Amino acid sequence: MVLGDVIKRWQLLKGNSNAIFLTGTDEHGIKIQQAAQEAGMDTQAFCDMNCKTFQDLARVANISNDHFIRTTDEAHKDAVRYFWESLQHRGYIYTKKHEGWYSVSDEAFYPQSQVEPSLDPATGRKRMISTETGKEVEWSSETNYHFRLSAFKDRLLEFYEQNPKFILSKNHMRHLVKTVGDDLQDLSISRPVERLTWGVRVPGDDSQTIYVWLDALINYLTKAGYPFTPGKESELGWPADLHIVGKDIVRFHCIYWPAFLMALDLPVPRHVLVHGHWTMNRAKMSKSTGNVVNPFFAIDRFSVDIMRFFLSLRGPLSDDSNYENGNIVNDYKKYLQYGLGNVYQRLMGVTKSKFYPSIDAAKNGFGHEATENDKEFEQWLQELPSVVERFMDAFNSKAALRELMDGAMKTQNYFHRAAPWEHKDDLARVDRVIYNVSEFLRISGILLQPFMPQKGSELLDRIGVSADASKRGFAAAKYGADYEYGIVEKPVDRRQFLFPPLMVED
Image (cartoon, rainbow, N blue to C red; front, side, top):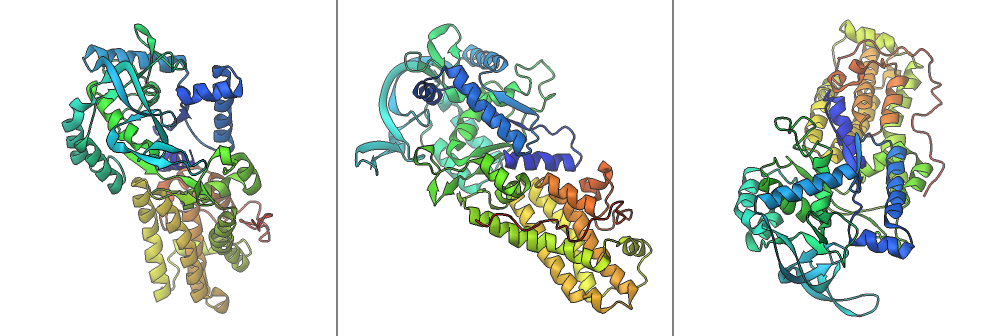
């Protein structure tokens, strides 16, 4: 959710008031049905309980989602039934006996080419697993409904070729092309009600329940107003500019979903951003082993902005990332306390919170020739917003944040070389250095807002930037774009750190 929120807030920062962020809970399927039974709960009550946890987490994590969809919502179930009937009307659905390897955990069938024998490390028991996810599969034979996925082989391959950045990973794209080109079979899209009761019934056939992944994928359309009013298909944001998905569900979002949409002549999402998984002790997180992180405890312990910062900085956009409390502490100290925070503290130490004369001097041209140190720094600072923008517009928020953190180190080096405390008699020279450091803080404060909404805003408050949206949007994140800050109505005691020492160390 944090990654999606950062991207949504970035769009708002750039003035895109139409940005829409959808998140939610997928609540149907065999796994949910079994989990509710094991908990001894009514299935809907079980879903309500777990959904509330995610809704609470979104609130606590300061997530700015516009919609929170539940696949048990009646509006969504209506959309699923309409989608099914539309596919059926166009001749893309038929019934047949289906045999294959089925994973209860993945809720998916796998062809013979995608399974292999394995030994359960805990018991030594022989079993078959999916080569894609490592989850156990079992042989299944049943009659159900199928979608003519194989009919879309050529269209999918053509789509991938014409849209090479559809999936924002060359490795995943190569795998997609190979999978579709080698062995694209028709897809089983229902389950007998004897095996799956918790879901949307097939219209006109109560003996079958719609496959959870056909059901779940349609959630994106539901909140975009599907079924669409003719002529207003894009009014509520479809097609999506971006889907953010885990690496284990690429096949569903990048093969099945485009094919479903193509079957109804609906636009395909423009991009899919794939992320890896968080691990703990270098192993996949699992509730059964206790190898998990409680996000509520983490936020309470470190604060919401620190956790947002850590997840953004170390988030697994390609490979998996290992979660360690020590890394949170180390990153906080290195990048925030001793990095950006130290830039702020050093500026306050020189100016005693009164740096507006230096901003006035900049407005009037300084009256001082820039040193090579000044020229190099000013050129870099002028380019910084564009560099961050390129990364963010390419959905690489991790690289954008690292650019800002590296910038804090660069600013400290500039400040150290300029040494304004050694040139107290040359006010014009001192003013230029103070202004340049102030500008870095102002620009960084603006650009940090999507990542750390509270701390970004606090930094701008501390240096006297107007709360007016025009002074805190991306258009203002330009060198020399604001000469009206630097006056703080209630000066902050410079001993009150922007990033104080953490009360916890590991």
